[in-house]
Image (cartoon, rainbow, N blue to C red; front, side):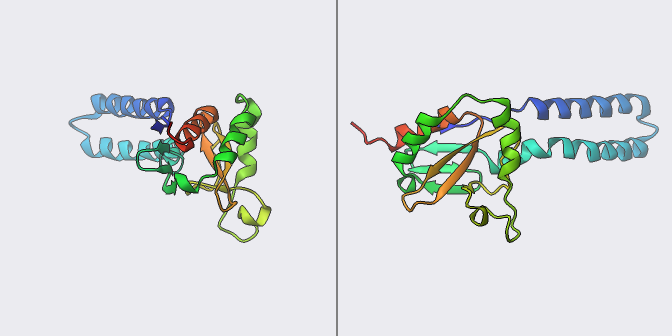
Amino acid sequence: MYVEKLPKTWTVFCVAVYLAMVVRLGVDALPEDTGVWLLVSAAYLLVLVPCIAVPLSKAIYHRVRVDPGRGLLRVGRERIPLTDVDPASVHQALRLVRPRTVRSRYLTPAGTVQSPLAGLQAVDRDAPRLVGGGWAVPMGMDSVVVRTVRGERLSIATHDGAALLTALDRALSPAP
């Protein structure tokens, strides 16, 4: 089984700063100004939520799991049977995988946006369909493209394309 771990450093940092600010404010304000403390703590949440929205989005839409026991490739909210993935496309993508560069991690995702609006969907641009339910590959992530046995191209956002493709290759290989 392959499970892609998502980095949690940014989320932990943001929550730690939020908690430090709330505790510091609480030391100065409690117990006399409980109402003000609660109000300001809630206002701090208005800053915290946008800061952790992208990591939460990555956890929902771009969590990758290859489970050969169940015969599934799970990406975000989608479950794709491994029997639907073309092994030849996985072998080809594995041969073409390159080390991550600044361009692949930050510039390429900008061109993968697919909106539900007509004309901006992947099929309208002859681009691979992004798997998982998100609208784009998040900045800081790579993507790998594989095909289904029906010929549909699927783009999978990942932190480690080589490891994902290796796990898919092992899962699709016939058992000796």
